[in-house]
Length: 152
Picture 1 (spheres, rainbow, N blue to C red):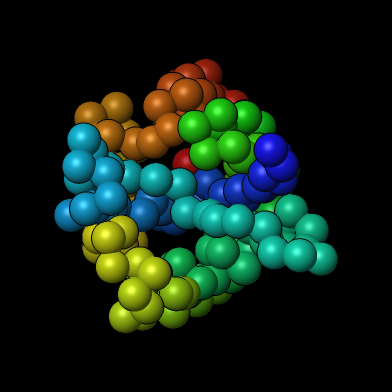
Picture 2 (cartoon, one colour):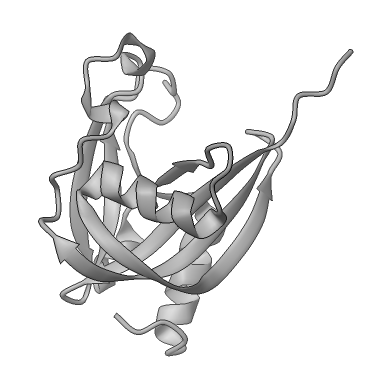
């Protein structure tokens, strides 16, 4: 049996006007146990891309905005998805939030069971009350905000 290569997922933690930019996922058919949740914007690294380039590309595709990478905040291994996940703190540079044109917004049949992708800016005090995945990263973000390690 050939072992499938590990995927690298990159994601950007972005604060705009004191709120965190998240992707709200609704009506997710492929996850009947969890049809609604929030996630940090990001996706798979493409061949030849650096982690920073991939993070910027994913944010542009999903939110329609340009960002500057500030620093890597978190790294985790997802055994469920056989991937390494890297989370970068990003600074908003330009563009209109919510104008992403990535494949998840097309009528590509590949995404038909993925539900709706809704870009949202979530108030800092509401982060605790939403289903933000992965939970491990949600906890780290909340702790880092409370301890002043991340400024909104």
